[in-house]
Length: 169
Image 1 (cartoon, rainbow, N blue to C red):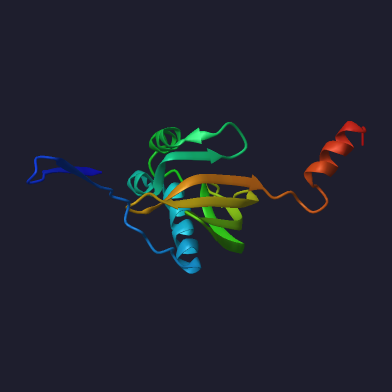
Image 2 (cartoon, one colour):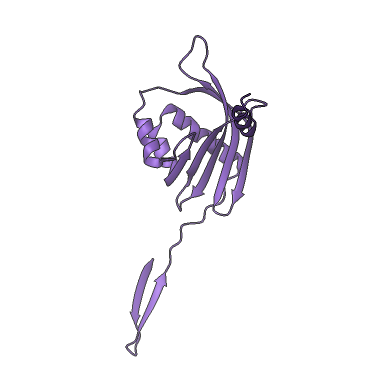
């Protein structure tokens, strides 16, 4: 905000306040959100710290099978990796969806991922749901929330698994 004070000819002061709001940004198209989301996860896979720093919102929370991670924890983890140590060799997408709400855009998609590091036999396959919440911070669209949840195999939903284990099956 900027405040300007003017003295009127009669000696009284007039105060004017200018409020500066972040520049409005048009919501990206669904195809752009999907492309940004894929590029973001690719940057994470490759350990591209500069791209991640540009894409992560200051208040990022990442939830993936444990305690939430902050932006600093995510970046520190990427920096600690060995050079060229990719965890995911290949990722394919299905059921991608973009939902726009007031102030944010949410990407959700089912990814099938092949673990890297075993070129002879191939890596394990993982299927899971990604959810990325993109917010506009006044200068750019950034990831504020990032989650991944394993997709259970057919017939192995959360309720069935917990119930069958407790009943001794």
